[in-house]
Image 1: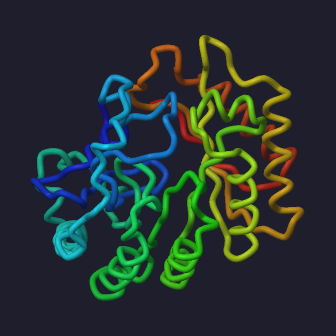
Image 2: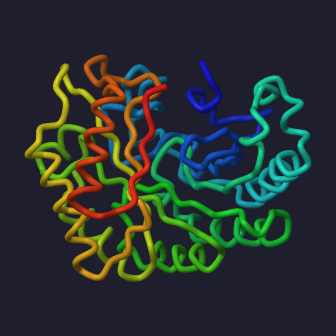
Length: 290
């Protein structure tokens, strides 16, 4: 298993911050985990975290949304120093990292669930922005990896503005074109129209990156109708004045909670990418199962 296929969300007993070598970042990404208890409003069929728990989401009563923000900031400073000094690559897990993947690319709000569900998300963004300004190379990004369900919440939107002012990017999930496919993949009670509206309004205020996971369900790849509806959703965002910086298409690379949720082949992914490019004119990055 390669480093890009293995993303442990803990490192040297830190509770909230962890380094990974990220395919989509192209180097070292320092993860900030605001939901260590696993709180999320999606139960995606391909979720690595659910896969590690054998498909069993935690009961809502077990979720502890409160985090120690001072500890988070302290851990972040420590991990950033390890990454920028090169000491990180003396660790057994990172020793084999190729030289071209050793640069610190971003600090990413990711982790065990949806980061914007944390009531401390706005304060965490401010703390991360301060650490980035003090300790990181100017090119370092702050990335919010989100399912988009709470981008319409005023405190979250304001935090996204702070993020954007500090070389930030929003990587927003859009795994479907139709309501039916969205329900099948995300297994969420959040209205699909809310997500579409949130992505469109956010993209009108600042550029977004759209992340889309395509996979085989019970041995069946997404239909042509589903792909056409998906590309139409992307065009709705851009036709409405929104800016999509790029689209990141990926497939399953790690253990899933459902055995019938499987990766697409490289050829299938390339065909999907070409369809998206042709029908939207957007920049498309493709990430495969390996």
